Length: 205
Image 1: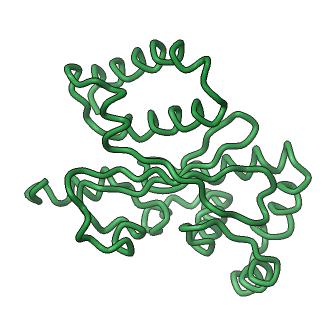
Image 2: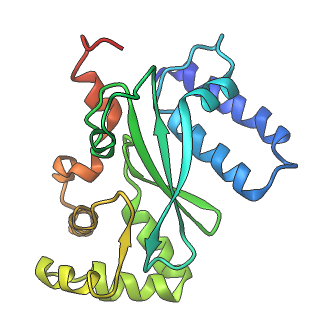
């Protein structure tokens, strides 16, 4: 994304923030989440940003268990007619120029978990563990486990899950970040849709 495009989106966020003050907390959260997706794409300054957000990005609440009051959102970014494409391909982000993004919000903060250029799961677990008893136990007794087989045994009986997210992939990412391993870009749950699309420059949009 160009510096000009970043500035354009930033200024638009400031202006639109005044318009959404009267809306519900959920409406404001959805709008903030959509801006994160918009920041991953080039948007012409001539385009109406709100129209772009409403036309191309839809929001869905995801089911989760074991994460207390944290809210997980699926942001579906779609271009053109995608009715004939199976949902299974979108879930693994195998459709070029389209993407399923996932974020989590806790304590007024938003963390990126899937589809973005950067992944904030480690930061989320750090914040969650420091501000919540559930988060502290989840970090200490589940994600800090050294053995992946033990991790599997822990999450399935206790129903620790996030809809549309690979828990084993998040576990591997968390362990890699904890050990300062820089090879995490090969993990599927870290897949950036922007990088994926750049690898297919001649795909018809």
